[in-house]
Length: 312
Image 1: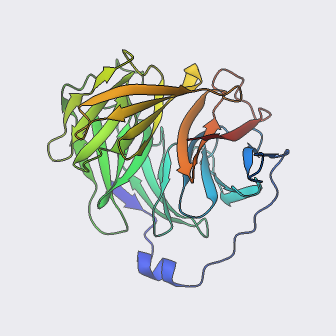
Image 2: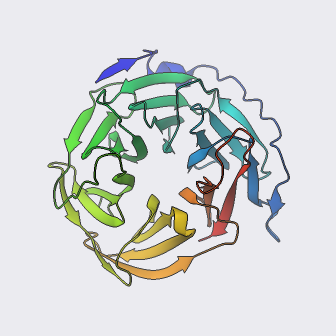
Image 3: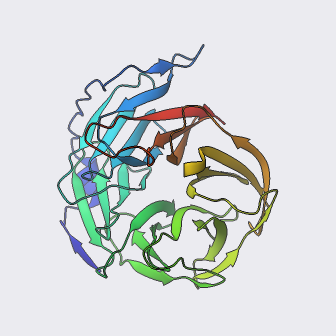
């Protein structure tokens, strides 16, 4: 692992004066939820190629671009947004998570990287080169305890990046019951912490696995009410309730977990006519916000994209 773009300490960076973010109006018209005044749908720039979305305690959503690694910030109260972090040719921003200290952890896809971006200024603080082997795909990220854990969809390993600047990246090979997909196809995708906080739940090729963070041993979760979570992409967990975004099936399945997440029981399914291959979700208040990746539509600079909100 190598790390580029060294910066001053997190305390120095975040403790100083923060430049104001000029937020331009987004293209298109936001649709407001009856009675709330907050939009339930808002646009992204044409050709954005979104896949990841994250939120924090404040009413903003951050969405990465597969086209060039840029990050877009939208005010959830108005639906208006603008580019927070400029992209560059050859970069991608796939999954991303916002930490409490205002740092964005960003999965770099085929570049094999994890990046840390200041969510207030858009400044790139650190880049970790997680893997240099051919054809990686760093896909999603979860913040758990002292690390940001990243999935590589093309390898049976998780990467633990220290939260902040200190510490070394930990590579955690996946063993036990883990079944890696054939070369060239995706395995590990979204991930969340288990309800007891002792491990992670990872979606892999239509199944859920718990992963022990000490050993990397993976155990398949027993599913009740459905045989699989085909197209499982982003995960959101609230207590013992797990939301699984099943992208090309245009639905979110909702599962009840036991304490150790050994069993998941299907409780209901969320569908919406506005879903157009949603990939990941993020919760703010009593809503889930999802980006439509539109994988079944042309992925061109003229393709339109948006994000939608559904009630929990």
